[in-house]
Length: 120
Image (cartoon, rainbow, N blue to C red; front, side, top):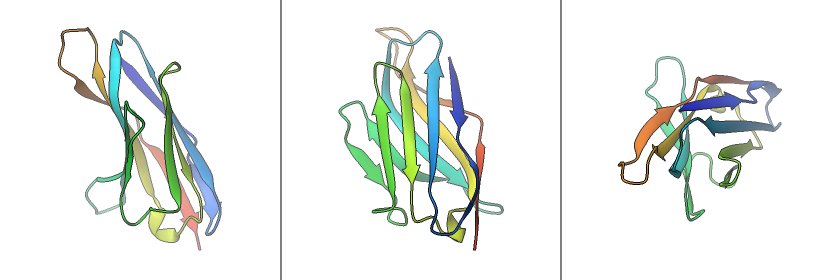
């Protein structure tokens, strides 16, 4: 199983970026997708997550600015980020809790990080 994240870059404050995450490999089902971020010298934190029933949760710091979505058929998740601030600068990681076979418990898989830099 692999997760491929893409879409990071450099953007001015107030701008927008869209991150994408695609899961591939032997996958029976994906329970939840999540986006995490880690700024230099900081711990990795959960930004947003979306369950298989499409219920989403957000960190307070991004509510109203970020939107997470998923496409179960394509095994993808996206994070639309708007009204970006300098404090959103971080490496963003995609995570998916994946069941590789019907009777396996879901296990976490991580994508490679993608850098988001917001200039003020």
